[in-house]
Image (cartoon, rainbow, N blue to C red; front, top):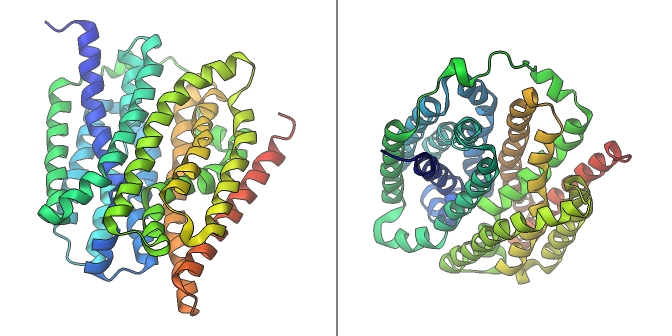
Length: 402
């Protein structure tokens, strides 16, 4: 018979495997940029739309997934959603047109939409309180592993088996994940675990909250934008502006994500110490974000001299944005914590979609005006930086007394 501790580890590992796959699919487009652009003759706008399709599907399902998780539990919701991802990943592997790729990518995002919120919902019920925060932190580390595998390992496999076979391999991993969930994840006792006597909250209570409103643009442009660069545009910049080869670009993305992995580990130790000195998360966001703007400005000025090192520094300087999610959850009473997080995720991931697409559209517009590639990228990233700064100013104005 499995002990309670071993059962908890098993539950975590099963869910972590599914979340790993979802993040591999999230960021793989950056590595596949050269081959997909060549095979399907993609413009920068097409590329941004394709990568962002995942985030559009993901964001649209956040709130519905939250309601489904409360009613049916993580086992059924995560497993059945992943079946959508399974079919969509196979569809992506056999796509013959940009439209086919885009539709498949959108439904991949739909299919993995519960891969994080599902486990977090279950952990609150199945794990002791002292282990919940650790499990949540480890899930973020698992996400970094998915990002890492999507870079250099995928690039090494590409010439051996091709991108279509890579997606078929990923579809096999998804099937294994679904089977493991059905075998090892506990069923959901709705009467006990949904806490029927708990006070119910309305979404309108979240969306009218002043603090939440102050974070909306920050989540959309800043948080979503950092994801857009990490999961796509850092790669094309290194290819088309810095002049990296596809292998060098994938290697650069690999080290960016390795650095992020260890940074999240270190961040987990640093934050409690800062809190002990009375430095709360919002203060860290207020004073930390301008550094990321400075780094992005330097990247724009450096142009073709800005490579993997500068993008690593940019992503690292943006790590303070990860504090906004727990800050949102803690700013609401318990009965609104879940709805506030899913609502916040809508802004983050829809922002990633629009920023990924928008950067590509501006690059294309500049190219159509006769500007060279390097100038087009610099202008597009400058537009992104302006929106980030405006979002930050809005955040400061609404929290000036905090």
